[in-house]
Image 1 (cartoon, rainbow, N blue to C red):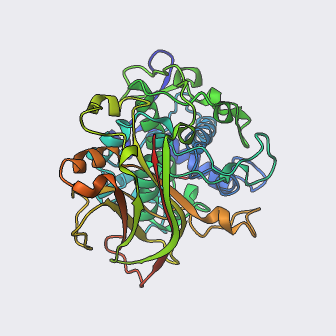
Image 2: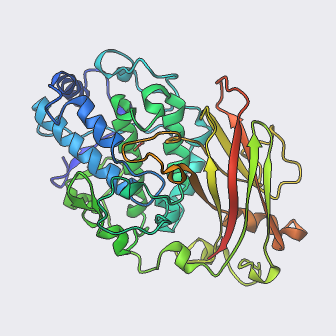
Length: 431
Ligand code: C2O
């Protein structure tokens, strides 16, 4: 404990008999043995996630924060260790599932692999994510389909927003790479590593805030009640108030909320190419979006790089909309901008590369989802600003046309049959 706060620590420093892991193991064992009638039962905990976890919108972070907190408290009670704090798995530092999770109670035998390729969890990606100043481009966006604030519809928190980089890259990718129970929403909390994965995602949110980045003040977010935890989102922001911190934080900080309106309400111009196209493995599909020269906000002489990086600075965004996942979701889609020589071999270190997405959460029909096929289509948000900045120095037609190129590739080391991925369209938004 420090400042009376429980400190969540890096699992990497813990041997199998570390008191934190001993307590976790004891708690998991008991949860697995509790009768189904007990809400603390291991599978009942999984049911909470299967029946109502939001992904692909701005409730993703606070909902999972509440979920992990409640789970941690159960662990505290069952282990009889009043100081227990859940450890986190920092896959950026150590891409192997920690040793104590590869045996006994903490093992999940359905895992496809025990390590995550570094490509989508490496430090440069985390730096870029933590350097994002806009809340929705960090935390995933406001749901696009309007809904009642206190809607009792079971799909209320699943409405589609767009997955931003933290969710669509390290979060989704780690799920998909480990695979087995972890690979799908409906079963992922059955793998004891799930909770340490989410603890790390939660830590990155806390880190982002500690660097002075602001959550939204939109009441659609702050006043939202996350179920079934009976908490409102606004009360899930301040770690000090919640009683915990991370060993990587000198001090948890919660900056004043941002007064900026939601992202799309700040759009100065929008251009789209909504026309379904089909991508297949190793083959790019491209969306050339005409963008009149006058609208480009980044005329080099007008705006400095610092202005662009600041919260509320001018941005060029791309939304990939209406994505229908492939049958076999073990595919990553790499996204490039205006790359004349793109091939399946073009590396993600290429200057035209803007990011990736995968398909965690695809094809899962949870309770209440029948007949709501449109809600299962996925959307992804990309901040193109840096790339546009970089490329506009070199390329003459960049200002009149932004061509987003999507290139699906199978997960490293997985045998994926030929797959087709339908993409509904691309929208370019100038903020
Ligand atoms: Cu709701 Cu990482 O999953």
